[in-house]
Length: 146
Image (cartoon, rainbow, N blue to C red; front, side, top):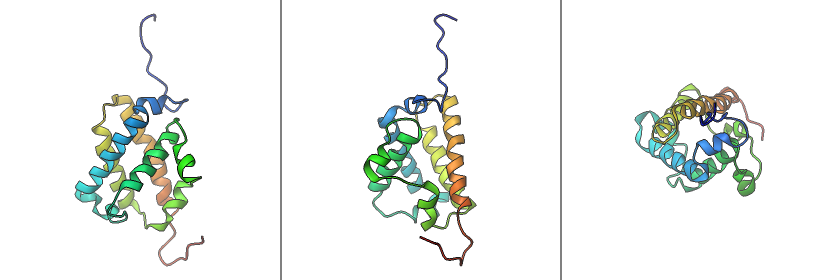
């Protein structure tokens, strides 16, 4: 119909990046994510995996999300290539850690001016790498190859 705006197709082109508010919007999301990690009791275990100063972690997550959501590939520009599951093998990530991370992200997403459709889409999409990180974990006691 003429004059009726159609909802963007998230995951196509830069539609998700734009729906997130571009790089500035992702910086706000990531700041809220780490605020959740600092304040939610269920996040204490995963917060302990990070240094006291979260500046670099914030920059890396924002940079990653830019490219992952169809925007500029800031992570590769700034830090080089990355395999998200392999990067996280340095930590023991099980179901509790995965769920705590997703809980922090859900808390942060709720605080953004996203449409309900994009908020749901984003959290659903973030479950994929979160679960993949958990799946690549090796059983305790097994040496990790580097």
